[in-house]
Image (cartoon, rainbow, N blue to C red; front, side):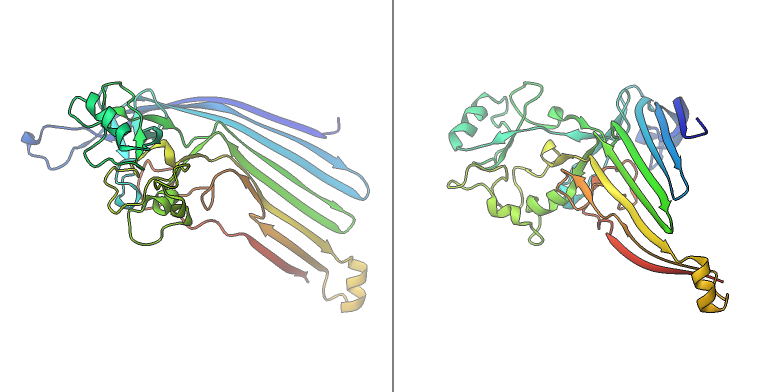
Length: 339
């Protein structure tokens, strides 16, 4: 069909072994830290596709290209069969690790507690404490207005054993669409980009709602639980967070899917015959244009920017929003002159 269509597809299945990991050894050997060894392995597999269409006529020419890809990840082995690697802990963001890398799971999956509800009365707390093996369902400082976390293993108390895998920063799929072309002396470009099905750990929400510090709280805390304001998902306001309401949990985990107008531009080139006569053939081309980057973003993520970058230089912390500065929306007007 005269090269109007193009299609490219690819399936890949890649296993990588010999990954460098630190292997725990007895302290009696005399080393201050665990040595590095080639002991880890991981598998990445998925599907990629690109489809495009080209249109050409005397005045109007354009091309439309779309991309789609699916990526899956699985950790096949670590230093030992039951080894785990936790990362993301920071005192300003709850103090607990946020991701865990473990055999059989995607790399650096989010790992923490699940929220059940907010305690509404002391009687509700006492009823659970009476059934707990050590006398406390969560701890001795839990009070009405604190978050009730799920007892996943059913032993009558909430502790580190009730943490579970909460999701992955890896999207279920990602996609893009690029449309560019020209009409007479006008040219244009539109680029859309997005992901779907990934999770983001909203550390900005931890800072804003956690009340872990005496500054920079968000207006969400104005809706904090009180005996007169019980219809809320924001726990009580109290210094020091004695119930550890800001611990790593699905309270701060959000859908990171988004569609973004990554780039859009339109330009106009003044015809050569008009330029030559006006400039005595000194200037051969004049093009004026306007463009914008990150013009629009469609997402349900409540943080600053769903395209979460990296912060603190730590490994295994992708998808954690440590209140990074968002990407700027920019507008540009320009003039290109050719001689």
